[in-house]
Image (tube, rainbow, N blue to C red):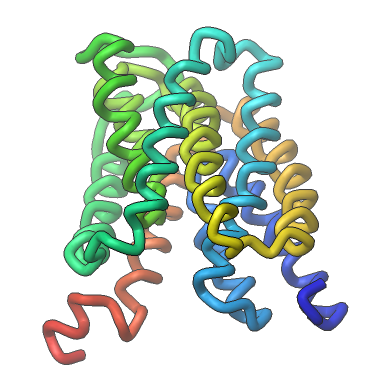
Length: 261
């Protein structure tokens, strides 16, 4: 198992379980899984690529759970997931060519803005509201753009999908969460295919963590369906803020480099 000690394998399994649990409710599972892989001594590129493999198990698990309860219609939403897949694949291929400096600088502040939006916006519940764009327009613009971002950079993609579904598609929090998991699965799978083609995926570790992701997402999605917006909203805000702080705390983050911190 990539010559990892038993205690590190257990660490990765537990991290994947917790990542699947959190991601199925509010997104941000990579915030847990990727640092765990780095702590275990896995190089950054392999950690990013392997995260795309193992996170699919969590996204698929949550999608199945939500679909069984009627919160997402898989048949009608598959084309949108397919568009996200294409966006994710293109993004992953572009990742080595696109200068990510400005993107990396902006993302933490966008995540903080999302956290503030969900904190301050009144009447955020599980009831659908006014739809501002048609499903076709949403699927042809917002979905591929976030899918592309997911492939190029990745952190916070689930939060951006959530914001789009709530603000533009008019979905309630629970419905938005359910649909985010399916679309996220698409963009993750697309970028995973690109990483797999370059040989960067650690298969044994990714599949092992996938088991933890699947189990964690089953429990998390059930809690989300039981508690709805009361659980999803605060966890989404915390997830956005934690991810933003983690990105800014990185000594190599462009803003810190530019300011000389």
